[in-house]
Length: 114
Image (cartoon, rainbow, N blue to C red; front, top):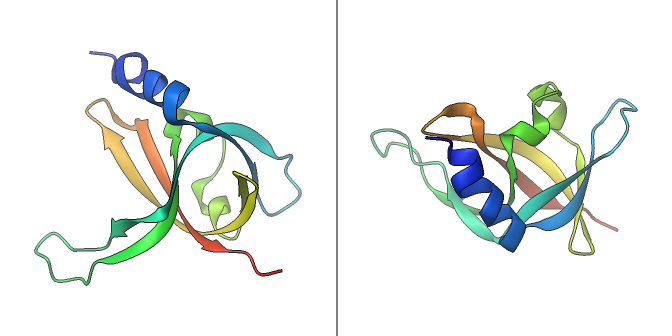
């Protein structure tokens, strides 16, 4: 089953907003669709609940949109979305049943200071 065309593409077409991701190192900015989750998502919580969960602002992007970049380059990248500028402090993979490369990547954000 192709979850990208059946699930992710329709969701991003309806809920996605245009975003500009600027990686460190002088690479050209990427224009992509993101789902604004800056109200906060639950992150953490180890396999056995040994980690403390927290609410953090995030943006979800399709993994296929970032297939050509080294994910290590996401740290300290800038994300402009909904008129606000954010710094990517980390990322978290959210695989689909077809694997990580066909799922989502949550960009864990912090608000850029003026």
